[in-house]
Amino acid sequence: MDGSGTIERQQAEMFLYREARFADERKYDDWAALWTDDAIYWVPSNEDDYDPRRHLSIIYDNRHRIQDRIDRLKSGKAWAQEPVSKVCRLISNIEATFLSDKEVFQVRSNFVLGECRRGVQATYFARQIHHLRSTPDGIRMCLKKVLLINNDEPIHNLSFLV
Picture 1 (cartoon, one colour):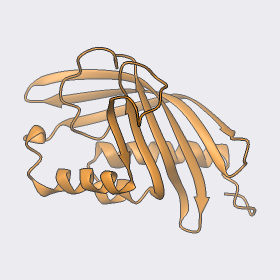
Picture 2: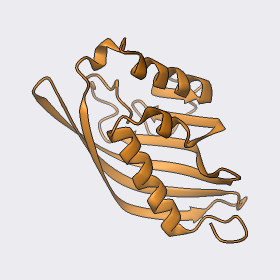
Picture 3: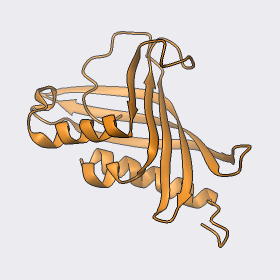
Picture 4: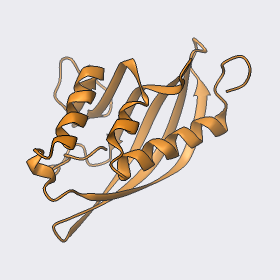
């Protein structure tokens, strides 16, 4: 952030890389700490843009549900993650701009996520949109929207952090 509390492009890029690393390395508490209290974590189904309160989504979590997801993954009782998936993601094509209100920095990017579990390897391709906000505690996400390119196809077991 510069002296005015504005997020700079390089900081936004570093935030995306850190967020991906926390998810990949199962640093769940660190990942959860990256969110604002009014956060939305959204993975649409069938289309990329619709009213998620009226249509089914793969994931549509508010801050409370994000924490529930983390608590379940940490509990050892997330049976769909027994054994735990090994994941690794690559992020590219990062574009960042301020939204009209100048308080939210929108970062668009592409990513490839590889997952290996029980000897089966899967690859997911997606675009993602992050809305970042400068807070007294640093940069935080108020939105993460993951647009899987196959969101209109059957998707097997997305029980890890996308």
